[in-house]
Structures are given as structure tokens and as C-alpha cells.
Length: 396
View 1: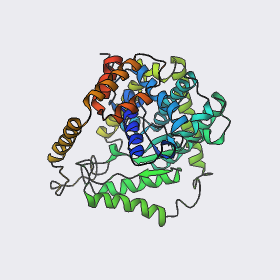
View 2: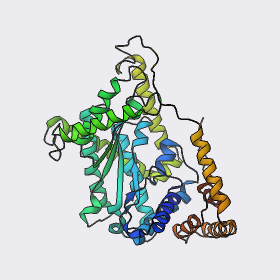
View 3: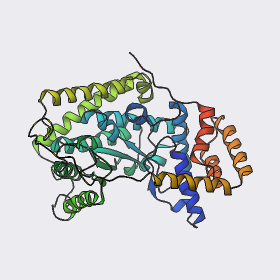
View 4: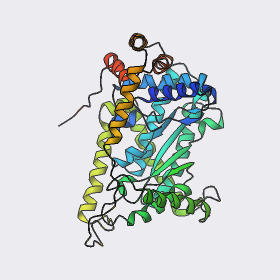
């Protein structure tokens, strides 16, 4: 579930649907992104201030460890940090710093490291430089294992594993000569596989222009299948291990990432570094440097600043009919008309009281709300009332 600020609500809805279908919570499997810090740093789809958002995340950790033990409670995401313009080393440094902040918050809430660390997972970007990306994935695993073992004293091997999903780089897709994106995605996907990804999403060739067509999605899927069944890249763990260049680059990226993490530690951690705007500025500076290199021609983007051709407008792009939105609005109105609205008001009132008490785990309360068919908007509206909204600090 790629959802963050209202992650607790979506998870509660999933649990409630399971209940209705006779599936107990302790059998549910899945992953929720639930990574709010990268929203403040890079993506921007936050709702609440940082500290109450961290409370919601640790509430999910605690609740799931006791009630939904097979659920992956967070996918700590570097993808959006890279999409915003970070370097490879910054992607893993800032993401692992976020992971450290989540662990510290969970420990502060009274949880034990080996109770939840094994259910943490990561989400990385696969960029264009194939060997750098392989080195980045390798460095991230090594760095995370050391953080869990040395900093947090994890004992179980599962707690030290960096399990990760990879998506190819949307920011590297070009509107010019979009068929070139098929090659880009194939190389990015190959890098992810050689770097040891556990799961993979391949973008489609026309996503710089619109949501992908079915034909484009099929090419993206076939790209994965050719890598899996024909390339041999998935037949061996760490196929580039021992390569002088890849080993040297792995060491260099790991060292640079460690330096960033050390600086963030000196600021008081990722939450403080985000509130001070440090991580945001580092990403923005890297994005600017990249764009200037493209503008000057120092960095070649095929079809954009070199090897251009005259092109006709692309035809056959996917257009989503506006009736889809109207259909969803109608369904929501029908649910609101048919539910017990007195029950809804009572559950939302309980949520408001619970949200004001920091000692209360909000997951059971939110679950009661969704059982009464409270909407996401209604639940988040109550939490907004208690927590307020995050306002980014802007320095001119």
C-alpha cells in the first residue's frame, strides 16, 4: 500500500475487510509504505506535524507486532528522495537516517528491537548508471546490517536484513523519443536484480506523457520476465561481487552515506534535520547540479540534449474518463446514507479523545471507526483537529 499520512486508516480498513471475509488479522500479509519522514523531505503528501505523525507510525508497529504479526509495518522509502534529485549516496543515507528515527521512536515507546525490526523493509530507486546502482544496493544492505547490530544491538539475523523493493526511475523517463524508455527501464531493472532486490516494479515507456496504456504495461512486464527467465541475472546472489570497480564503488558510496548519517546524528536525528530543512536543501542542491549538467550538455540525455529528431505528437495515450471520479463519489455518498450515522459520530468522538492522550495507541480506535464506516476524510479530519497540520518552513 503506497500510502503514508493516512496509513493507519488504510491498514485498519484492510483488517476490517478481512474480518468481514472471515480472515483473522494474524493471517494477513502485506506491506504498508507508512513512511512519513520522506514526505516532509521530498514528496510533500503529508498532513500532520512530524511528532504526531511519528506517533501514528509507532502505534502501527506496536499494534501489528501483537495482532498482525505477518504484516510489514513500514517500507522506508528512498525512491521519492531520488526522484526529487538526490544522489545515490544521499538516497541511502537519508533513507537509513529515517529508518534510525523510526527505530528510536519504537524503542522509546517501549518496544524491543527484535520484536519489530524484522518487519521493516525498504523501497529503492533504480537509476540509469547501472554499476553505481548495483553498488548502491550492496552498500545499503551492509550499512543497515551494521546499524542494527552495532547501534541497536539486534540479535536476530532477520532484524539485520535489508529487504527491499525497487522501482525504476520515473524521473529518468523522457517525453522525447519515448520508445528509448524501454531500453532505460531494462537497464535499470537489470541493475536492481544484480543488486539483490526482492521485488521489482518496471515503469512503462509512455509515463512521461500520461498513465501507461495496456500495451506499454505489457512491455514493462515482459522486461521483468525476460530478465527473470532468460538473462541468468537472477540465478546467483550478488553476481558482480568481487568486481574491482563495483567493490570500490560500494565502499565509496557506503563511506559517503555514513558521513551524511553522522552529520544528521549530530543535528539530533532525521526529524530534527528535516525540521531544520537540511535534508531538503541537500536534495535540492543535488537536483540543481544535475539539471545544470543536463542544460550544459555535460550530462547527455539521449533524445533530449543530444541525438534529437523531429517528432510528431505521440498518439494513443491513455485518457482516464472523468466518470470514474463521479462513480467513486456516488459510492461514497451511498455508504454514508446507509450507515448508522449516530454510531459514526460516537466513534469519531472517541477518536478525538484518544488522539489528545499521547499514551493511547490509536490503531484500535481507528479500527472501530472504520468498522462503523467512517471515511478516510472524516477520520483524518478529527486527527487534524487535534494534531493540526504541518506547515513547511521556508527560508528565502
